[in-house]
Length: 140
Ligand SMILES: [Zn+2]
Ligand SMILES: [Zn+2]
Image 1 (tube, rainbow, N blue to C red):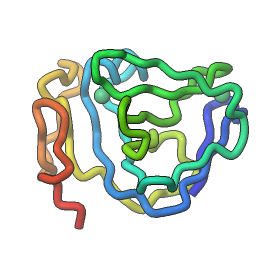
Image 2 (image 1 turned 60 degrees about the vertical axis):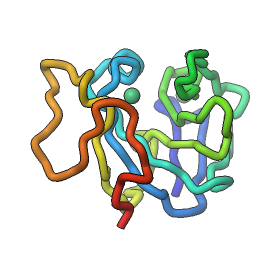
Image 3 (image 1 turned 30 degrees about the horizontal axis):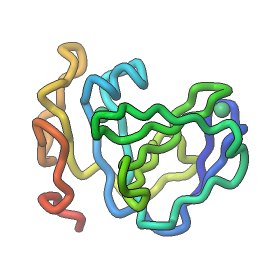
Image 4 (image 1 turned 90 degrees about the vertical axis):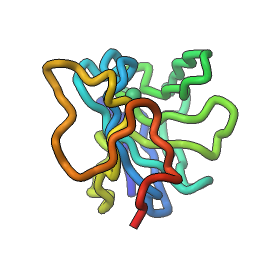
């Protein structure tokens, strides 16, 4: 699986299937993306590789225990997010992928923060008012 930022300077590869995917409604994702929801896929440890443009990758570190956000410094396109203390917990932005990852979102998280103009859909997926707990999600 491959992906890239909006301008194409940064490219990456994911060489193992994703573990899971989720939709996030947190205010940080709203500000980061300019819209109501963000789709992210959890990678298997060590399966994510930047294949070009590493020098252009910038990071926003919230510094409050929140995940670090990696994006292209040239175009602002978001690429992936990583646990501040554990680089093995790395999730890619599904919108940056070139191909269909196969997997579909399995949960909604931070649903308490959903924008009034983008409500959480009434589907069968588990809804977490705060951060999701992958141990409570059916990964199939
Ligand atoms: Zn870019
Ligand atoms: Zn979020």
